[in-house]
Length: 140
Image (cartoon, rainbow, N blue to C red; front, side, top):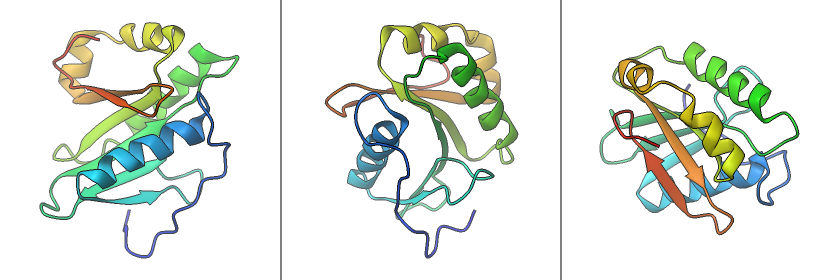
């Protein structure tokens, strides 16, 4: 996805633990580290792209989900979405979710060997918008 000229807009409510809050918190985190941010403009794009301004090869594709009544279904949807977007093994891929006990439990169900094999990161956002990031080789 070309990040030039991307609008910075969110359509979902930006309150914890909704998806909009998760996306905006992750965007703020990456922005504070010098990344350029692009949000999805349609259903065929990742929720968030973060590109390091200093090192263009440091490129993140992130799918986000909020806490809903269908946590398992939404988590499985995020897994499918991120898998389909894994088109370049040199990029980094992550799923970002609110740091609720139910969401953490769902993320722990993804086998460690699989996370390592495909390079999948998990990003948790707490109610203050603070980020906890787990690399593929790190236990959640």
